Image 1: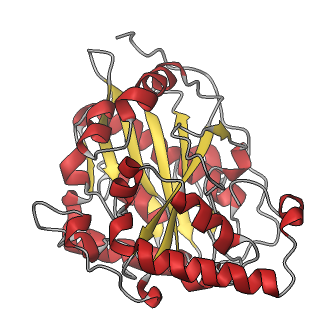
Image 2: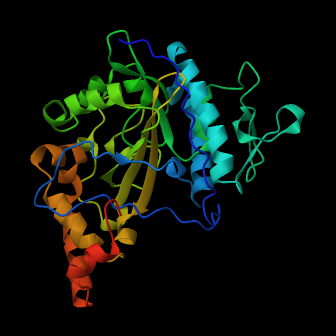
Length: 361
């Protein structure tokens, strides 16, 4: 393990999101699936523009309320910070309190610091102009766990990986409130590799582990990245998918889900993840923003049913098992094929798809 030397990098100031409204700005339409016949297993990283670190939209109030309820109900089972990650968690909180009033000035206002200055970089805190909440990040002790405060500011789940003495990266701070399929209490303290192998991520050892470990060792504060993924869910529960079992049960998994439920119970769950190195502490931050829509809604969009059907058919046996295809594939593929045929019959020109969309949309 190399001892992390704090770096002087400062995030560029964010530009205000054009015409953003907490009531009117719709979620971005991420549809991160590709046509078969091949399903490529890789990290799928792409560079992130600093302005786009955190995405908020008109689902903010719903997510905010759901997180607050989860914090009340489950507390440290969903939000916690290990002592060795405390500085990183506070640094993340400071970064959010600097960024959010710059990017979303109609939702967040920087709290005034010394001499009544409201420079968002002064580390005093922010006020949520929708809810009236004020978040003081300067007074010690903090009112609550720093990851819990951070969770209340954004729609994302948050995690911080910290390098251990053995050179591996460990999950040492998290606010995992709306993850759907995994629990912070199961993964907290695990090294990166075990997090993935314990979750049976397909071909992790063969295709992902080496590249992922190298990425974590080499990622620089000035080089943030993004990735997207997607899942199918057969219930409408954002925080925890009860189809795979009770959140408090052992032995959860797709094997508990009811098979071939009606299409109205099928939901498209997509994650947009950012990864960045914190310059002062050296912690690596994941932001995990979930987008959650009925399958019937996204299949009204041109090209989506056909492309999604092709993507699902490209899953190998391991990916199919991981994503639970056996429990919903028959009903879902029949519906996707039907909607695709309807779009073709209505005049959809397949040759023009690349002109109107590009990955991950």
